[in-house]
Every structure is written in C-alpha cells, then in structure tokens.
Length: 107
Image 1 (tube, rainbow, N blue to C red):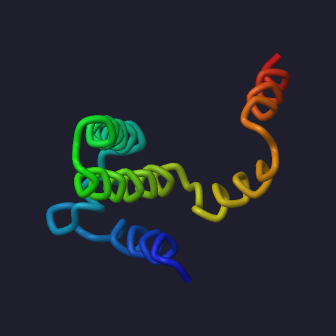
Image 2 (image 1 turned 120 degrees about the vertical axis):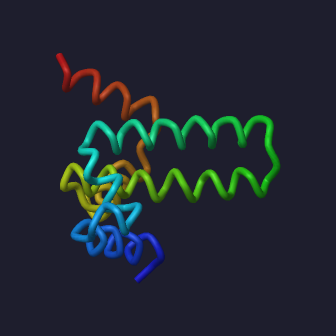
C-alpha cells in the first residue's frame, strides 16, 4: 500500500468525523463545489510555486494539491483506483491521440 492509498483511507475515515474537529470533514461538509473550489485554490498556489517559488514550496503545494484532489474524489464517490485505471488505459497513448479520441467521443 502506498501513501496515496493510505491517505484515501484516512479521508474516508475522517469524512464521518465532526467537521469542527476534522479539517477533512469540514471540507467534505462543503459539498462537491466547496471541495472543487479548494482544490482550485491549491492548484493556483502550486502553479505559483512552480513558476516563482523554491523547490521546497513546490513540494509543499504539490502535497496540498494531491490531498485536496483526493478529498474532491471522495466528495464525488470516485476512488483513486478509478483514476489509476484511467491512467493505465492511457499508458502508451500520446497526449495528442488521447485529446483527439475525447473530442471524437464528444461529437
């Protein structure tokens, strides 16, 4: 088991906690929109750290992005396993091909 799986399990456990006692429960009590907004904020901080900050800042912000992404996935009943399966499916496919495939599926 890796740290992301452990974190996903911790998020699931803390989702049942009192929002006044758990940051994770508080985030989840804000619903999908609240979780999405927080991930967006953290992503912007990671972008800034990646372009103007130190390596240490980027590592910190990237960890925040991963945590908040897992919270958003939990809020949408999507598992890390689902995301990893999608990455596996894309393995060996160029980004250009993947974008073309998705555009064709939308038509």
